[in-house]
Image (tube, one colour):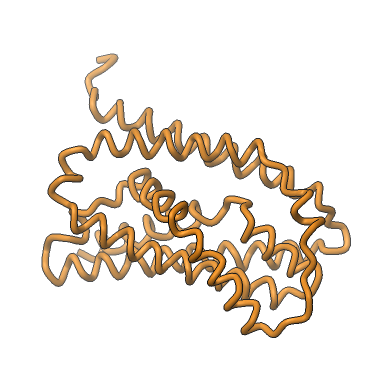
Amino acid sequence: MALDIFEVLFRGICVGVAASITVGPVAVLCIQRTLSKNRRSGIVSGIGVACADTFMAMAALFFYSMLQSRIEQYNTLLRVVGGIFVMAVGVYIFSQNPVPQIRRNRAGKSSLWQDFASIFGLTLANFIMVIPYILAFFAVFKISGGDVAGGGFGGFVRAVFVIAGFFGGAAAWWTLLACVINLFRRRFRPRHMLTINHVAGLLIGILGIYTILSTFFDIFPDVGH
């Protein structure tokens, strides 16, 4: 049971990190605040994103568990679709240039609470895009509705650990990003974000390809034997 819980926790952490490494508008805003204000502003903004994403992960997991019986029938298809979706997101991220947006953004004077609240609301406002994205990573890391829907109290505990792992992974990523950006703030240039975008897009694209290939190897385990 303990090993199962830790495995679920680890998968939740992986989803939290994977869902956070995209350099979208909220990431650009966190970076901009770190550069224009200080590390604390960047970290607090990142925690705001992590909290909002965690609320949406809870909604996604609830949706997943409620539709468990139907979803489990199409588990293989969902993994393939999720892999394709993640791969497409990777290509999109790779092709984006965040430099103009960074140069447009200007972080004004605001309290840490305002930094948290503003980015929390901005992230929640994009729920239509974020929830399918999180669901895709649930499929990629093999977190299914069956993991949390069945088993009574055990299912509830697994769900709690998935969400705790998700928040921990997301919060750790945003904290690390703010600290690294702050460490090199004097040398940091907006064009460096283009490199980060390329690396993040490449990693996410590879993860999508791996998901698709591993799914087909699961379907055809005897191929090549």
